[in-house]
Image 1 (tube, rainbow, N blue to C red):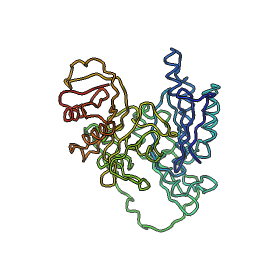
Image 2: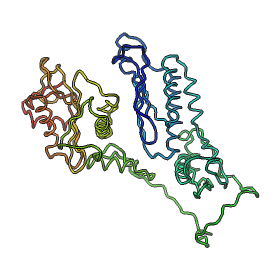
Image 3: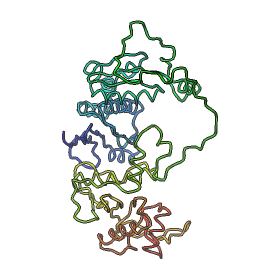
Image 4: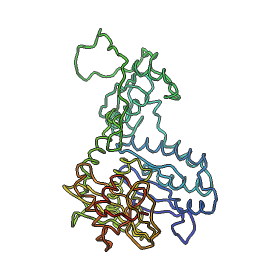
Length: 433
């Protein structure tokens, strides 16, 4: 499968055209409806461009089912997206790409959401049946399709969401499981029914029938070392509230065995590892909207670091479709050191600026229409901060444009760190836009 774009509006195609973009990855494909320009035109005309509730509910149901399928197939990726009238993003297995494209077309043009509902039903997995109480054997090719170890890992994750422990073992062609509910998890859910809507206890009062299958014994300790033991006692204490981590996630995200926080924190600290298939002729690479997709994807990955750290709604680099020429020369500067991308600057050119003396509360100066490079965002990996990396990126932007550092414009609002950096390059004031 290759990248492709399907236009929903008739030609001639331009920035206002609605289009469906497909990007394949290792385990799945991303299918995104781009209606950004269309929504902007509708907004200017004062027309309704919001998505109907039935539309978003149908998309959410299909997205939930498709992500479940991807994890079931063996992927360990994490998924993030934004909901809004400008972009609709889904992550789907390859075999469901065409159906997803058709569902988006029917929903957008015909206001028919039944295709999405049918797609969600087709991708839905019988998780409740798999996690039903009782000892049993699930056979590969009959009850499930992925390798047994992959399927068992997936089941453990789904069981955890319900507070259930899966006593399971993967064999060559099957998985033996016995889901059980701990008293602690039962108590938590019964004391907070609003926090667990729709949850029902199917496990506590279950009794194995006499003809229940017997799990084959494959060795292990002959003595039950917990037989006759007293249960652990618990005490109520006050613990600190989950605090934010400097990387943008919370310390609570470390709980549960997931590596998401660890991986993100490592990248935030040391930088994004530079892909081996990219040849860096120098330490600083300038990526544009016309660069090869591998470079544009790297810029998008690096841009996720400040997005997560500062809790921005949108990624500052979104040019992941076909190569395109932008009127404002959108570009990203990627600085590499020790095999990792440690610095990132997103910029474009614009001619609408005002002067500012960098003093809080002071008024901006008169409008200036000179074409200048504008800094949208700067990010530096944690251990490289306060070492002049940001200033290096700003000088590179100025040199690339052919101007002096004081002539560079900064997007507003300028953060505290941004003001400190700006003062070092232009102590008398800066241009803002």
